[in-house]
Amino acid sequence: MAKGVAGEGFGPRWRRGLHRARLGVRRAGVDYFRGGASDWVGLTVLILSVPALAYTTVCVPVWCPPSALVLPILLGGLLLRPSSLLLLYAASAVALVAESAALGPYREGPARVTPGTVLIVTAVALAGLVIAQFRARVGVPWRGGHTMLFDLRERLRVQSRLPRLPAGWHAEMALRPAGGQSFSGDFVVATRGSVGGRTLEAVLTDVSGKGMDAASRSLLLSGAFGGLLGSLPPHNFLTAANGYLLRQNWDEGFATSVHLVLDLESGDYELLSAGHLPGVQLHAGSGRWEEKAAEGPLLGVYDGAEFHGVKGTLRSGDVLMLFTDGLVETPDKDIAEGIDRLIGEADRFVATGFRGAARRLIEAVAKDVNDDRALLIVSRD
Image 1: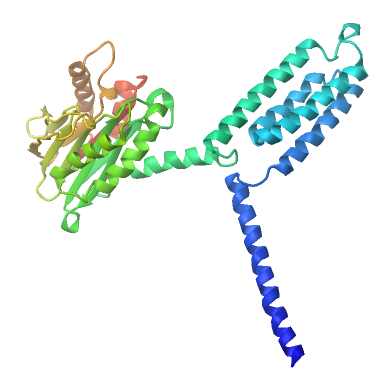
Image 2: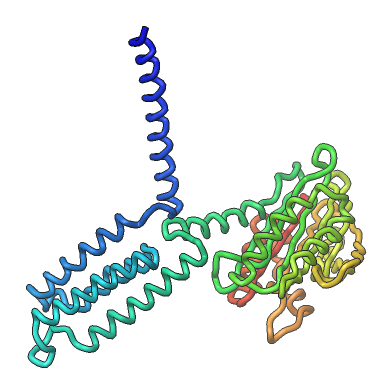
């Protein structure tokens, strides 16, 4: 009887112990890839490399000069926490003293510990400490910092994808951040609403600032606008977006936005604008372009703003283009001239069609402009 009880007690204890061990290994793995694990492995490797470098310097100083100690110091600044980094610096200082004693005074020959060597090692150590303290303050692990930025960029791209349209319609957009960066202050969110996806709603927004300066606000607003779009009646969207910006209390809290509401069966549409540039429509029947300018103040400026739309219809062969000011405005020309140039370049696609035209138009009109550029094209075959 006692043996049976003991056997039953051993089995559950063994399973619980195995479960705890498995959870511990999993937790350690997650901490490692998130950067939350202990850095004793890296610290140990780097500290062991210090005496190895010092020994090599004493044996062959021509091939391994005393300044080679900057290598583990530099890696330590990228990999270690500030507290661990100080231990590495202490080991490097001891190594420099040992090298100086073994090689002799620097005045007696080359490849010795000179005051310049000490200054270089100290400067690299201070730079590494600043980097480590910055990482610790921001809370971005070295193993996942670049992955996080890549993920943010991909999220912006995914949120800017246009939904699939029915036969007879084509829509495309192109974004070009300022300075060739990966992040832009311009973004597009779009959805197909109503019953059966009859309505296309697309919002093109230009956040104050550009490039990396506007990236965080652009990411936040694109997520918020994507949640609002299609969840509210079209005429309430810009009002809700304006209230959202006001609640953020940003120093640079304004943005311009244009909201397109398109009926994919009839071709009727309405543009609602919040301080944004007018759109331009090509009437295939007459071959002329018409500006479509709606009225409304900037988003995030004052409460109670009203937004009045402008209506139109896209018939067979018609094209509607929406864009941000980086595409048509430069210091040496005004917006009207920029829009005329954009229309002139767009005329080249009338005969061949506008598929793939968004990217090529940005390259033709504003290839080297140091500003975010965005272009949305909707055409009816």
